[in-house]
Length: 270
Ligand SMILES: O=C(O)c1cc(=O)[nH]c(=O)n1[C@@H]1O[C@H](COP(=O)(O)O)[C@@H](O)[C@H]1O
Image (cartoon, rainbow, N blue to C red; front, top):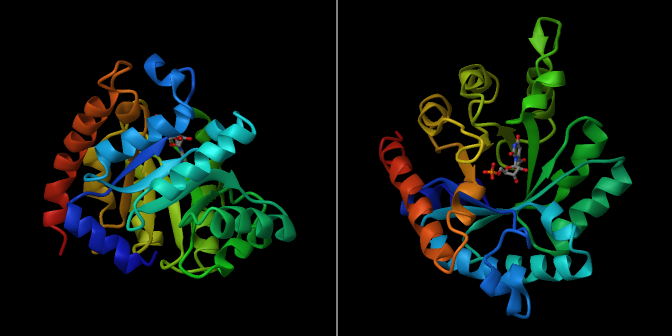
């Protein structure tokens, strides 16, 4: 998907919501366990209930890998079920020596037809560049993560700059704002003004609202740009809003609440 197509969808839906699909067999409503593929059945109903408000879906690959071959089958069915105009993110946090990264890229872009994959920057340029060779596909590089341990390395300074800033400055020359995005946790909105000085035009994937307590308003105020530039993710806050038979309706309501908070920000984009 191109950046223009993504922005068009954001304007149409007045939303920049990404719904995470971290589907855990231990957490889905028990009445689904009798179906042929409970993980897919859950995802299907979540997608149907939220697609009016979501511009992206982000299955976290760990949840599928943990189920073995059956998990991969559920993931493939899920990716094929997501409407084609909605952006898809394989949240896999990959990155390895070049020939291995190329195969990760083929797995998610060619075999499964995801639009993007999350990538860890630690192994540097030759671990990221193979993902950038695929037309209309995206790398979403970890920048400032939402978790507590993100502080362990990401803010260490050298040459007067924190590590995350070195990562963003250097890596943004490997591709462009047409094929690279960055992860910035919603729990750390105070870094967004500085981040926007380094990468004014890139889209940011912002996880951490809902269950992790991130601040949606602060993220929007500091992070939005002239093409929106934000995909804000919520996972548990939406997909596990209810553990009963009404889980899809509850997900619909939570997604709608977030979309309504986002609508004014979209209307004010100049
Ligand atoms: O890359 C990510 O998506 C990610 C980066 C980050 O810094 N923090 C973070 O929580 N995530 C992912 O975003 C999702 C957050 O889920 P909830 O906390 O349930 O909304 C999980 O799939 C995490 O793996």
